[in-house]
Amino acid sequence: MTTLLLFNVTNGLIIGAFYVLMALGLSLILNLSNTINFAHGGFLVIGGYIAYAISPYLGFWGALLVAPLLTAIIGLVVERVLIRPLYGRDPLYSLLLTFGLAFIIEDGTRFIFGPQGKPVTIPSYLSESLSNDLFFITGYRLFMVAVVIVAVTLLFVLLRYTRLGIRIRAGVLDLETVAALGINVQMLRSLNFAVGIFLAGLSGVLAAGQLGLEPTMGTGLLMPSFIAIIVGGIGSLPGTLAGGLLIGVASGLTAVFFPAASEAVIYVMMAVVLLIRPRGLFGEEGMMS
Amino acid sequence: MSSEQTRKLIVLAAIWAVLLLAPYWMVPLGGYTALATRVLVLGLAAMSLNFLLGFTGVLSFGHAAYFGLGAYGAGLTLKFLALSTPLALIAGILLGGICGGLLGLLIVRRRGVYFAMVTIAFGQVFYYIAFQWSSLTGGDDGLRGFSRQPLDLGLFKIDILSSANNFYFFVLFCFALAVGAMGFILRSPFGRTMIAIRENERRSRFLGIPVERHIWISFTLSCFFMAFAGALYALVNNFADPRGLHYSQSGDFVMMAVMGGMRSFWGPLLGAFVFVVLQDYLSSMTTNWMSFVGLLFVLVVLFFPRGLLGFLQRSKA
Image 1 (spheres, chains in turn red, blue):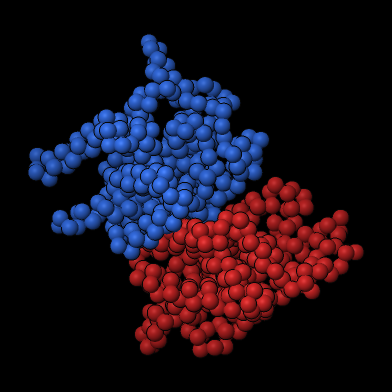
Image 2: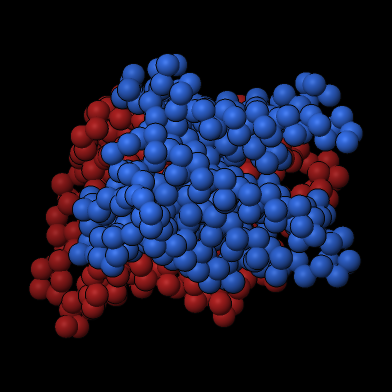
């Protein structure tokens, strides 16, 4: 029983780490641009397929670095051409636009790469199992968590200590003042968007190594990421981090006792959080209204 | 009577004439009656959503949940409880409306994007329930094994199952009831306060309007109308689809409202017409219709944000 429990908690943490990576990107974009990026799952798919396309030439490690960068560049173009005209309009419009974009990306990848799943080969030393006595876990799963930890640490360092990061955080609090201080807000939003999409691309590569690629793989991760943001508290990145891990572990634990509800439990958690602490676990007062 | 009122009456008469005669003009134009019925039902859904979106100014991106609940409510009633079309409709309306009202209590304090986000997430709950609870709902395959029943009016029966035209007129009757109720509410003092909240929430609050309560009432009413549309949709297809609960269906409804013109009462119906006919046509022409629908979203948002009616009114003024 302990083994089973431990296995599922670990599993939950790994899935949670995934949610965190997705949700942090979404959260960055939401906080600064007031845009719900419905196409975030689509960018994950793009990242995965780019990795699939370039890994024969660059190998897995090269793809791990280059694919998210290329995804971020695509994100920059999308932001510049499609999303920038919508800043300052009702958030409804960016929501609808990214919603349509998600359709196009899903259908486009299906058109280019076919509807069947595609494998991305990972180095054999990563796919071996680490231990069989306690519980089964492959090196790749630990590796994913390690990558997520590195990426999240780098993100927080970026936000805390670099000029760009400080400006982003200031912009979340009061964009008008930041603009009045002579900072190019458009540029700030673009770079912030690109950082968010980079994270989506990175999750795409990691997911591709674990599960293989499918055009629909992004949509399933979108809802848990939304919930991670709501549970953690909108406007707070540490909150998103905690929220993602929390719902990951919660659904992992539920899978032990009541597998059918492992998906539903995260919605229950959201309802409970909204009932007793409407701003979310780490959210600031007034951020949600 | 001023000329403005006369003009409105003429437009209204024209709309109802077009709707009443739809089976007779749609077929010669290459459509079919069931398509007209679908436009009407999805149009009602889009108008219900717009009751909240266009007239109270809050965006719910999870309204498909209440649409789908209406459909499952009607379907389950016909399958397990009673072979009666009116009872099925009532059960569907109650199921969707009550669930919407209860969740609304949790949702209404949010605003803007956050309102949208919470509505999406809560909407998905019902999708998962319908998907997982396959012993009751049929899971991924959807709920089958029921069909709409003839209307028993005591003296005579109306066959709405095999006669597509009879069914269209039955749906039109239901549509008229729902739309009449919506119009009545919007003209009432309550409807005026809804618009006041849309225009300036802070000022409404200063005037002593209980904003949260009004948004909740508007949300709940809109869920009831939505569930009505959903229940009718189950009768249209003799089938309830879990994808009818999914947020992508919500996106379609929002799109219909925006494309038609969300500031006008009838706009969403026009949007639903264009959307349904286009989707019907595209999915028969190409397997990549998803890309085209996606492209439609992008183009409407970038170039027609006021929708068709908004565009017409603007170019006239």
